[in-house]
Length: 380
Image (cartoon, rainbow, N blue to C red):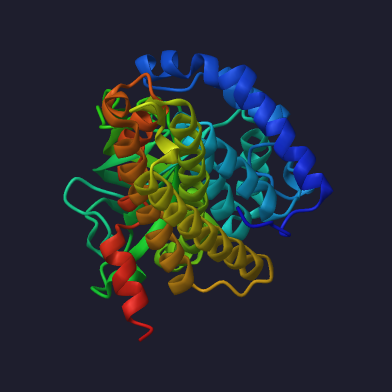
């Protein structure tokens, strides 16, 4: 692939640490985690010890206060290692971003140190059974009652929902009828009476990533738990953080697509058909050559987006474009690569088959790609 000048020596050293952790402490056990439908808490704690969680958290709140390139490395390597269960780390990172950028001092001091250490696991509850990308249409409501809110409603597809110690809930706190101005983000501790969780949801892929539904019935939380200390700011807070969430999907998609391509390259070099390796057939070489070019273009796009993000210039439409294009590229790469594997590609023992199961969700979560097209279309 093309050389990358985005990273410096300390980033390369960090990448080596992440790879060792994944190779030695995660990949051998990932199949067991898939059966259990969650990643054990000691892995979260180990990731915290290695500085892999919430790397941008300020030192004043227990973090390392590093730049987003370190987050990028974690996402790339998790994608390359096919350890999709660890995508919960990314959700956890997104939750930390809400607290860092919008939380009160008390909220930051209470939650961020434990999150960086992997002792506290977080989740965010946006989607509802009848409401997906249209967040203004949510029906979960937080009704004022003295110094508290009483929350009623339900949420679905909650990543880290089983493991989490607290969840940031998107709820309506107003009745102005103006949609976005009625939405607030409220921190709810997982052991709060009235909050219950479903069994882990059975998904096509991402079997080790714990995902469930959450149900809120007369859940009482103090008003001090409103993110930022003021209601009605939730939609603005969501929009500010969605750009990074979508960039993270683009990053993970590229890491995964690169791994799918490289494993297929190895396979076509070793697998012989009609007396010669598959890669020696012109059809195979041309297909792989096309993928190599597309991957180089995608990586260049994502790296340039990261430069813009580091400089504070990345806009939402560009992040949406990156998420859309890279997640669809991942799907194209996997489809071509599986075909080059023939029947072996349909066997789950083969990495490309697992990519086939894992890649499809990237075009759905963090906003479906149809919504991403709409966001890009608004800039025309």
